[in-house]
Image 1: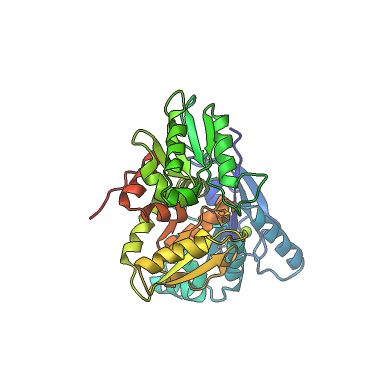
Image 2: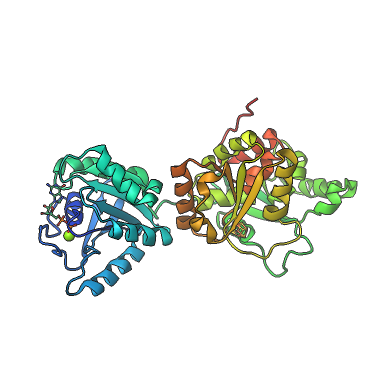
Length: 421
Ligand SMILES: Nc1nc2c(ncn2[C@@H]2O[C@H](COP(=O)(O)OP(=O)(O)O)[C@@H](O)[C@H]2O)c(=O)[nH]1
Ligand code: SF4
Ligand SMILES: [Mg+2]
């Protein structure tokens, strides 16, 4: 696999110690460190292998608060660098007072869904109250991990590296759509389609599943289930499905179903065939393997009480059909089981701008097939840092069929969901 360098940029005010952090990381005097403001005239680049992280490209940027001389040009360059970065290291000197620059970096970086880590550079031993004041001045800091260190002290290097390694997700983390896939085996894709399903193409998760299975030398087989007929208890529809499954030369290994069909598939899937859903597949893939976190979030459902708020989040603004999952099915289910729970919706970009995230008891997120891992991970980081649990459509709709159904769809992913009582 082609390994791409992760880009790590160091940002902050003049004299906050950015170049010192760069030198600490590179272990050499890459950058000129000087107390004269504006010493780093332009961005300094260092190419390096960092143990445990692989090849990185480090950017030591100029202070954004420089106004003299080439100030504007430098600022433009710094923001161009920010766009290029996978990780933003924001260096803050807690002994200063004006944090307009830090706020600006933070806002721009969050807008771009960047991974952001905060470094408090302690020029002198300072008390917790200084840092408390900084965090009061910049409320957005609550969303990000922090470390305090002395940038000019070589002994701080190990702690800084450990901090970055523990909190940074490299773009080189390789993700498998189906980690459980075996070659020369059948995989069934249950794609109900309804009157409103646009003709001419599969939805993205369906197309991805088919492509992945084929690429890995296994055999995808699509099946169109007639949900309306099946739900009316029409025996011919059940027979059609059983005949289909019995028509294979050998047993299919797994069925991947539209989450909406979980009410049927939970009981229709024979014990010797695995079952999971497209939405679960997708959220695991886009979140870079964080399915377990979405499973953990489902527990919050049982604590819902009247007056609580739940946020249903969809990552794109697709056209909504009559029996839409996010606007009709999930809200109806919640209303039936937990009357009085208030449901809000976020479509597309609004999530990042939602000032009320903290007020939700639970966030139910769609499969996220139309957003990048970078964007989804930014959402998860925000929710993790403010302690709001989150789950996903596929997990929710499976759970809606009971704990056994959820257990069933998680088994292929190596998650042994225990039916708590
Ligand atoms: N005592 C002390 N001095 C520091 C520390 N970090 C940076 N400095 C000094 O502060 C000045 C500015 O540091 P520099 O890294 O060039 O800041 P930059 O403008 O953000 O790149 C230099 O004289 C550094 O030696 C620190 O943690 N402790
Ligand atoms: S991003 Fe979410 S809402 Fe949009 S199509 Fe994909 S799963 Fe549906
Ligand atoms: Mg510098």
